[in-house]
Image (cartoon, rainbow, N blue to C red; front, side):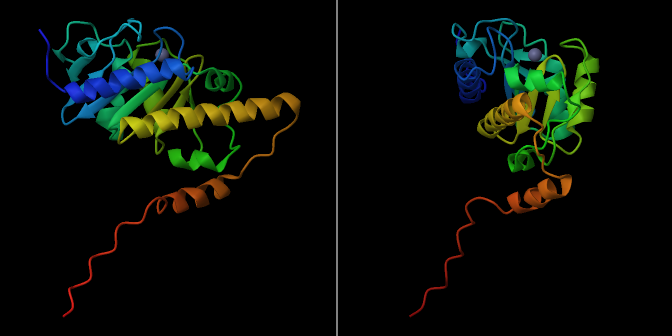
Length: 223
Ligand SMILES: [Zn+2]
């Protein structure tokens, strides 16, 4: 039977998961994606190839992790996703195993400040200490690394990016991977120059007012 619960959100989650494969942010069945609607979360299932995944395979759980719709088991990283919703106010979460970010996680405690774009996450992105995948300990480590940020790198593992929408969380995952790649390329041939925390904080403030301005209020009609 075809379920209609969160159908549109499930379609978005599926499309995002497939895009992660195409963009090289995950390999095989690794990584996972979720999006929240009210008290429910649509999340990719555990261990299913994204190319054969259907909309009905995307699970729907409540914020305690109880499956309310779907026949497959949700991703083993469900505790990580749920902590992002319960504690960090996420609307969507993208978790990747992207190459450059994992490489940086082996070398640094924070993603080096190579580019002002890190301001989109609220500042420098921390590397969370290693813990086994799917464990409550990993969720806690990532939650601590997130602090006032919207992204974290997980040592020996990958990245997690959260945002109000799936599109923004996915953009964050790509930007974070790109910054890690820039640092690795520069580091391979020299000692990279880095931005200061103050320079990044200045951009964080500017980004708060970035984007399209709100439409001007309609002037009162004149006669
Ligand atoms: Zn993972």
